[in-house]
Image (cartoon, rainbow, N blue to C red):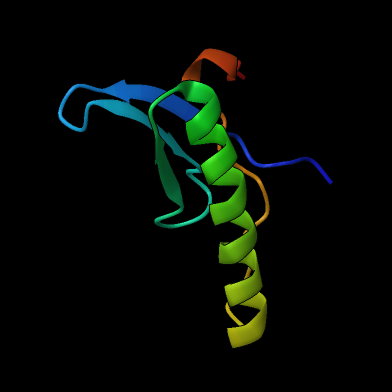
Length: 73
């Protein structure tokens, strides 16, 4: 199975890096560095998936693709 796309960007407002997984609603994390944000996001993703499994919430397949990777058909 392909894994989820991850966005990492710097937030002036928060003074650090935000990482998120667009396919998993509200799954994001903060870090002082991009690496720290990614490590925190990996933990958040596992927690999100575990909670979904325990509550019977559907787990969406990876679908998000940034526009830069989309091709016209």
